[in-house]
Length: 272
Ligand code: BV8
Ligand code: ZN
Image (cartoon, helix red, strand yellow):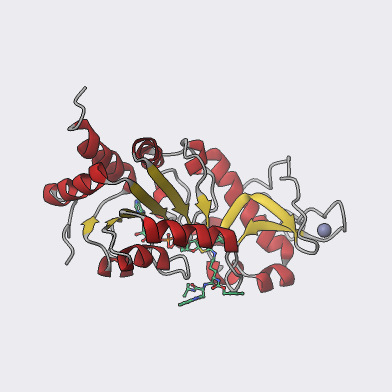
């Protein structure tokens, strides 16, 4: 049974706050929605401007990189530049506050940005890799991040469309360097997935924030927690397939709802 349809109701917030205040082992599971208020477009919205004619799910694949490495590398460098100009928002900061308060807190993110780290989260588990960890597509050796900024939005390049940036070459084998993210059709990093499933199966609360719950196997994480009997609280302005496992739905944007949730959970406990 889920509550909290419509705007974030007082009752739902109080119920979620009580669960958070008594939690000893919390998992915070995040998707692109938590970075939306930092101006980092969600995966679905990432194809605006120069990229509007592309389908992210076709671009975020090994085949796309093989067929047109400069186009795919250009897209990721454009996104990395966007993240570099962004700042963690109050939602990321609230997640770090939860980690500081709950004895065992694990952040599991599908995001490839570093906003959780920049907000103070200690060691988020990145299920889909990271924009800041490029590697050689041939020998898999880690490669340095390019120092020069990629083409500014829309600057003409050899094809004149400002999208293509030739990927750097591996210093060891001269193979093309690829983004350190997990593409569709690629396996998630085994250790990260194992740690996430382990944390979800042992938690006493799972907070899922800003994810559509459509991408697998990451989307299983809240379901694992529910299967092991933990309550699930969802923070998302929209309905998602995770409504089916959420005990409480806080329908609103993360940068507003998460700080309110942290205040309701702990300010009452220790008024200033
Ligand atoms: C694999 C990195 C096998 C790249 C990403 C089972 C069922 C169905 C399909 C599959 C399945 N198992 C596997 C598949 C295939 C596929 C898949 O899931 N397809 C789906 C789309 C149908 N999965 C895979 O291919 C995975 N690999 O299974 O490999 C295998 C095994 C062994 C050996 C070889 C192979 C790999 C999937 C990883 C893909 N990489 N990211 C990159 O970033 O470029 S996924 C990418 O899309 C993001 O990481 C994100 O997780 C996902 C969705 O993007 P978004 O929609 O932007 O984000 P999100 O879902 O988080 O939604 C945004 C939400 O935020 C919305 O709900 C919105 O309402 C909300 N929101 C908006 N504003 C706010 C907000 N919330 C709060 N506050 C706000 N302000
Ligand atoms: Zn190499």
